[in-house]
Image 1 (cartoon, protein in one colour):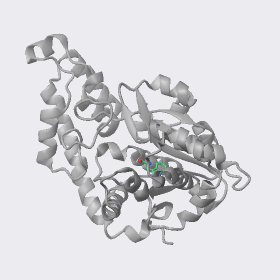
Image 2 (spheres, helix red, strand yellow; image 1 turned 180 degrees about the vertical axis):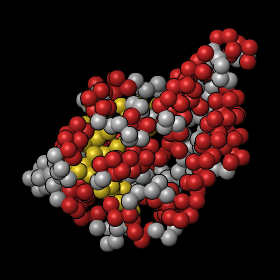
Image 3 (cartoon, rainbow, N blue to C red; image 1 turned 90 degrees about the vertical axis):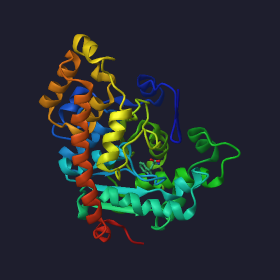
Image 4 (tube, protein in one colour; image 1 turned 120 degrees about the vertical axis):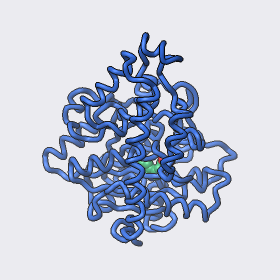
Length: 364
Ligand code: TRP
């Protein structure tokens, strides 16, 4: 298995990652405090953390807390890309805190050989509309693009001075032939992560991210309390990868493998019917006799992660599919209806977001 911020390969062994990275599992004590939050948090897709218990304690003690998570705009957004932002919004709703959203157009420009400068800027603008459409609170949410909100350069510079080349090289697997934009970028992402504190003073921020992004957290935690900054070490919440429709461990950017937020009803229906990996029996007869396996069924997984927040209804789908009473075509239909309803609303809100940019974007 290989898991870095820019590459995920092979079968992902999460318990090994928890050990190797030295992070903590989200235990039942923490879970109890997450009642009413997004299914991604409540149902264990977010599975490990750093100091998130402390973040919750600070909130309970009425201390300031915040959330920061970002987006690398390399393409139009698909469902998997929404994961950290759905959680950021849920934390904002439950804990009434500020949310910071950096858009790392610089990162994707450096790392993606074929992404032009103009495309990187275009995708930023495009992706920002999808993020605003999620319904963040205008006065409590701050979005910025690295190539546009150049104030960040100052903070990245202060941080760059405290990261050695060998640290960055080891943490991010930089190669001799990597361009040097790539080796500077970790300072920029560390600046994003500390930005809530640069902006509002010392306090605890939590970063919801995919577990592959943890090297950035480690790096940032290592420098946060340097005397130059005297900041809190940021907390983190780590998600597992979201399976592609085919059931591959990470939703890829292939057209067939993922649901794009811009997909039409027809495209969604076609993709789910054709590609959604099924845990059902190979014939209806066999399915009715032996039942299906919801744990590997992608339609069930998407319902669990995103589209069926009601625990009782979800359990009924699980039990009926497992017993064979609910057929593969039927569980797919449940998903298609819910997914299309979500996308229809999302696409409307995305249109409305075009008039709201000013309320969210930070200005130099
Ligand atoms: N590097 C992240 C990605 O590729 C995006 C990102 C930019 C980010 N700045 C961040 C994530 C700050 C968390 C915190 O998806």
